Length: 489
Image 1 (cartoon, rainbow, N blue to C red):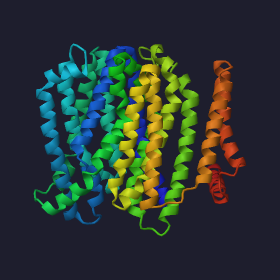
Image 2 (image 1 turned 135 degrees about the vertical axis):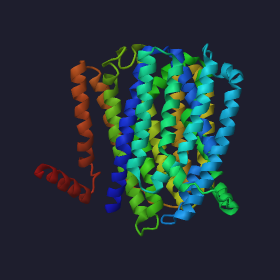
Image 3 (image 1 turned 90 degrees about the vertical axis):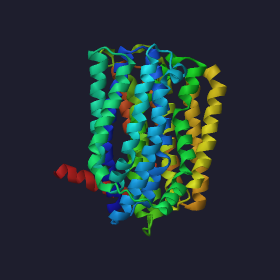
Image 4 (image 1 turned 90 degrees about the horizontal axis):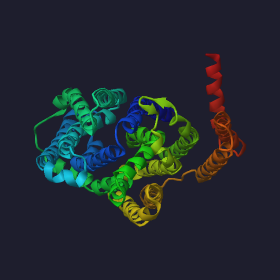
């Protein structure tokens, strides 16, 4: 239990700042929908998709290699690992970013139809360069168990970016240029905050053998990372070029409403990777990892219901410039449960990936994600002409399921874990039943009673799990002790 408490504690630290920071970022969605055109919103998201792909190319698998070759307690060794990772990433980043900057006039017409597209490309070319300069320092904070510094730094960068967005868009009434300039300035502050770590760990001594080992580990993860990004992002460019920027803007705004599940998956992965790399030698490691998968699914089920039940109330709230989400975007809200389900299976994939990092068999990772990415692209190309942005949502959901299933098949060969399938299937069935029945029943009532009924169904989830025997005796006893302590305090 002490190890689980450690994992939960670090997840809460990563998650606390990250959730607040991402929620603050989420507040930009109503700013964009109320102050920018739908076409601008679509092109902003499209360019950020390209930046996300560039970040993977820039990292060149060195973040994962840094994690694997880092040795606790061996400072000199870790300085060499840090230096090789950092300088390789920096070299690639400088080359590609400056190439993009100087050829912005040629690139801009392909990316956007906005009049100021060249300026957007020039600014956005520098953003992934600065992102890459923070990749290894962030990894250092994670592997050296400094979650507070990690979370606080990311939080500050996010807050600065959001404040500048509001200043540039709402106050100065700038257009999409303000969005990218805000990110650029915030990243400069982030890089500056890591100067002490960079100076401390930089050692200009070349070790060709270690670099080859790190490349041998990291490079095979690039196709998997790119394919994973395709799973997350490829629907945007396909949707843009098969429809238009406005449709992409409509899809992206509603896609972002799935942020609670995305955050859960992201903050858990931040904490879980260093956790399983530190405890895989424990005698009961595999049962522990199986139990973590069950608890992860339980938390995701609760998040699914809360988001699915209450998001349509949130988007109608008053906000700067109008309502929280401009009403022209409301008709796309139906994709939300599909998006939430897709993010959940992404989290399952991240859980299953643990075995490959533990056994150093990362060569298997591309098999799952490449197959799923191909299916994602194919489904988008086939279905968008008939279903528009709904096709992209379904393609994402189906592809994440396929990635998880394929990865599970290989994971059981390299690092078999006996997951608690009975509990997982029971939890899934009860959650989906509660959602669909509660959602459709509540739609027949007024705003107030709909809210009350959905809250009742949320409580019903825990009641049904107890009645059907989901919780073990020891878990019930721990919950009783927990709540009794709360009452005493």
